[in-house]
Image: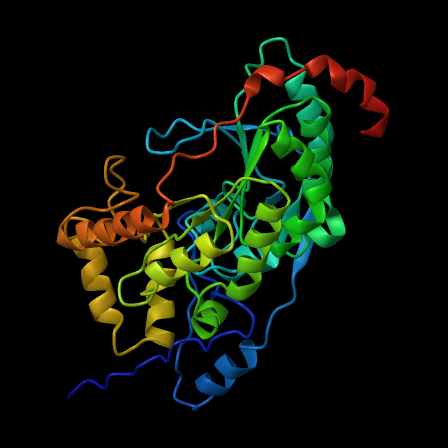
Length: 365
């Protein structure tokens, strides 16, 4: 008797969300999936589930504020993240697998079940005043965006900036959120003292692609306005054209040109990387939105990773290797040279740090 192949359809895209499934994480004790039992109800069930899930925010009492980075291919040592998870929902986000440590899915949970740290400014102030603390630039938003939509209500990032301004501590911010313009009253004075720099990520100028690639981040044209607003306020601003995804994000030169026209002073990029569960999530997204080119995209990603979906080697994980990676690098460097964007990141001054000034601010925290 011949066997009958039953094809389980892909989950339907969720409006306003990057991922469409509760991808099982690597620490889960069991896995559940859709199953066609022959009654023809599977597709109706998937359609019902495709309704946009609401965002849930839980408050957490943070035990620490500053994270230490030991990866040799990352240019900073100190990071800070006011939130866990990110409502922007970027399907390519390398931080998605970190939600697995919380027993939450790197898929929909990462962008809908968020954790806020309202006590973070006070914890940060205490860490900065510790006798053993050695000041270095702190990068805000190194894992999840500090200006995701819930910052409008929680204002934790704002509190962190107030602490750092009070003690003259240097900071850099990486964001896709136009909400950073709210804090120009802090960032502009700090920038004049060489204490602040901002890097705005613009993956593509194509609004239709951005809508499915990073659904709740600011629109590309809005991010360009943010670059202009920062530059006009005197805040050193750079642009990140990361990640570069073969046959998906194909307008790097146009992004760099537009950012330079708006006042960006430097630029950087990475290529797509697929650690842990992100690999399956991204391939699911490809199958949903670009089925005709999905295999072609993955073939080029593997070409940059020595034939594998992902290679965590520090020497190549950010830029890849091989012919395709070299082609991306040439395009980037030639465009930056033409536009005057290939300058070093802004150097910030750690010598102004005065932790004693925070003791006067304690009643505020």
